Length: 533
Image (cartoon, rainbow, N blue to C red; front, side, top):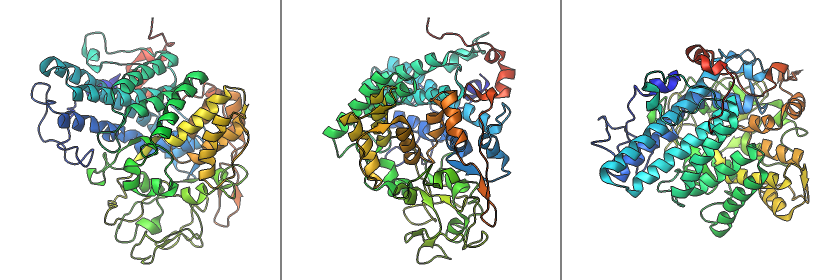
């Protein structure tokens, strides 16, 4: 586990303040267990890094490539090798984004594990302080998500509960453990988090015990343990019903994804990564760099040379038959197309508000992408007061990992219990809450295909849809992928159609372990073994 061994050579430095931001100005000292972590502020400053810099590699391009390019909701620009292997399922163990995903997950898990061990040791010095327990619970939540993500992505993978053990003679090589054990390990972390995190976050954007309950529901659904998924989802739904000011569907869907201030602490967010523009390359949200349209971000006041539009909504998402229905408001809230207008997005060339114009080649006024559209989610517009954007098009926009809408759809699907349809009143109420927010009429029954389609349009561009396809198994996944239009338009808007086929070599639906990891640890090439005896 080279990545985690390297982690041990770094110092986990704490934030100097956690009052307003997770990551403002890191401490210039090197804290140790002996001289630090004596206060809640110091502990919470240390856990803050688990929401941002730890996920640096993954958030850059892997987040979109694994969840959306692979899932068919996003297209990469033709010829862009960064994304093409995901676009056409020609994924190799040497691909850089494979390594980025693996590294980020183990980096986050390793940092969390080091903090867990550090805070446990600190208890021996200053006693069982409540803030230390909360810090441990928060770190275990983040570690649980890291293992959930890496288990979904790669299948059977190593588990390293204490990276310090890897420094012992003969202990640096770790085998792959069965995926079911990896996810059980994640659930055990979440059970601790659920028992020890507060119901109300001590800072906007931090996880809570309800976050842990919701994440367990998502893992149980992935495992097809429908009863437990339903039970955990219902606990979250019941909490929301009793506390509508604290948890629920946020009424302004569009604002959730285009305003960092709304995104940081709205009632729908159960868990999101937190970014700060001023933190630079490894602490800010870089999504706009790749997804943002040039006419919006290149003119003053942003003055960026970025805004590449290298990932754009797929034609499949834009086709009403396979993506957004003609009356689904989420299309206008999630995508920019010809005539799109935002009065508050002003720059030197659009002093009265930004107009999305596809009628000419891309310059500072017009844009022509391969699907004549841009992603709107996670785009906050030009640099301005209250919404800082760097010259590299980095922002403070959080990245959603778990929203309350997900819990509602998990409950509806878990109620089906694998039967493929339901007319259960509670399941319909949960489904329709999400469905009608988008301006669509309530339904009286739902099928699994309808539920999966709802997830597709609700969570498009949020890095998750591939896992909805994957968990259906190879036959169903192949059918879903084969129906998708992954092609693009030429300059004259003629469709260059491309329909992907899942190769037989991809039958496990897992990504290959990075080659450099299997070279340094040959145990990763051997069959997986049980973690729990």
